[in-house]
Length: 316
Ligand SMILES: Cc1ncc(COP(=O)(O)O)c(C=O)c1O
Image (cartoon, rainbow, N blue to C red; front, side):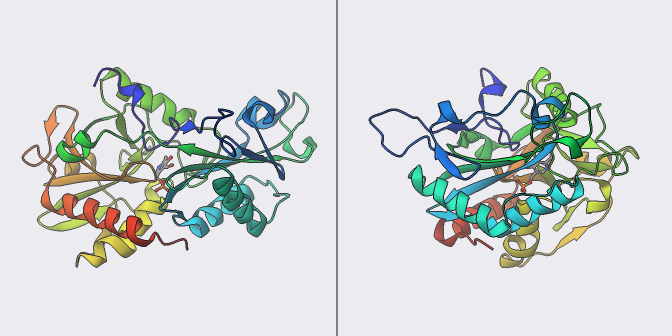
């Protein structure tokens, strides 16, 4: 691949807003604080603490075949993130649900990506969030640039980042805050190593997650994944794989602490995320995983995931 940063990552940050070409009515509409506006009018203040301090939270959501995949789970996580940072949303969960559906419809988006953001709002140049005026909420509907199909066929190489995940006690990675520098700097390590994703360890040296994905392994037919106490975003896709996709294929998933060596010695490794869906890993650093091809259990999970979301993506 010529430039890894061209491809999407599961952090979903590389999706493209829909065109606002005048020949395409109702495209490029952004929902901003209760109104649909064209991208040029969707602006926020330079004094917004979302920009000044990364003070806010967000969600990335997929649309499959006109259905908004796990919208309820994403909204519940959004409101948990907001509560964890003492941000009182001015819009109810139901109103944001409506706003997302309205934006998807206004953009004629049948398959794509939705970004929901709450910023803290306009404040002083000091840190105090409680001096900020009403926070801003916005919804962007976008095309999504997916990993190339070749990576799903042959596997995604990843590295182990030197940079550790922020400890739960400092800023719980469970909060999907606007402050992603910890992940971004690990992502830079991946890009510099010529790959698209990096595994992040916690401060105890256990495996946590990737910069924009959760991680699983398979050894002797047993699927396992770090338990959430390792410090991670509680991925909607991770939960869907544990509770619905794996069981549909007769598998159970064990959640427990993992050392990185277990991943080097695994038969199969795969990542999950809103953008990545379920993608096999074929190499970690210079170690080939299994026989270097995407393994049979991972392939079946990827296929089952796609079958479910394409046929009738659950919105709960
Ligand atoms: C740090 C991190 N971990 C995991 C994930 C996967 O979570 P989900 O499946 O909800 O997209 C993401 C996705 O945004 C992420 O940013």
